[in-house]
Image 1 (cartoon, rainbow over the protein chains, first blue to last red):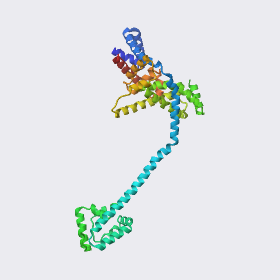
Image 2: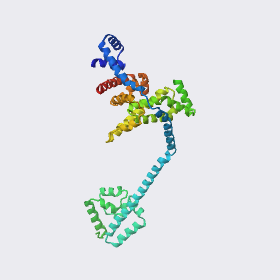
Image 3: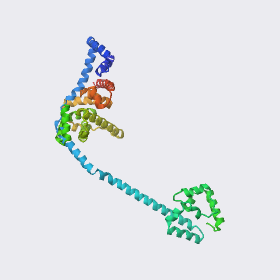
Image 4: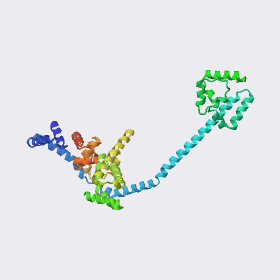
Length: 206
Length: 181
């Protein structure tokens, strides 16, 4: 059966060449064995195909069209409000992002002030610390931005030498100022800065 | 048949909604039964059928009159059926519960006669075990009596490729039929 099955299936599926087809049909006429196998396979396939005439409940097909129209109407209605449907979450997302950005900026300013206050309060010289605090409170934004450009060098005593790495970190950080940058200096750099400040300003930094 | 279909499309495009109703009446059973054999149950077949009719309603304005309406509708049904099968496979992959809800299917089934139900179940057992693309060609050849040329136009596959696919489908179907005996 197996060898015949292969041939029969190739015949049914139309895979035989002209010559093979001629040979197969001749054999089908002569060989009872092949004819029996062929009829058997055809019977099995026809048995499966009988279902195409299955009786169905016609109410389903009668109700199908109204159901489809209902869905089409629903989609049409949705399309009318589609822009609003997408606009609301988009606007909400923009508002949330805007609020987040504002909040971040405020936090940065507050964080900066806290840190600055903490550092300035540790300076023993009352006059120096008062000067820093006044500048910070009167125009904090300008004060912060001033620390971010080359004018930074004006704020630092001229004979205070910073190595290139420290300077890059001071300039490279968009929210940099000398107080927050202090946190980022290595122990060695910090010690150098401390000593230079002590020797050039003659003020004891505690 | 083609002239009649083209006439219906033209009437629909000129605003006569009745023409769409006639198209649906003419093709709804063919659409349903293709989907039913592909999906193996009524509820999925119903979903595909409705989806296909909505697509026809919305896209008929783009019909280019190069192919027959019959072929055009078949393209939509075959694509939607395969998509539905893929969706179900993905859902099944992520779901712990592998229950197809046989009771629910049985309650809604539109085939009520017992003999037909049994035959349908027998076909389902075989067809659901062969790959969807082989199942598709088996259905088109055996249940819908479509020629290779027609199937080629619908699926966009070469006739040679379709013959090879049908050969493998037949082989598996016979194997499974003998197993189920």
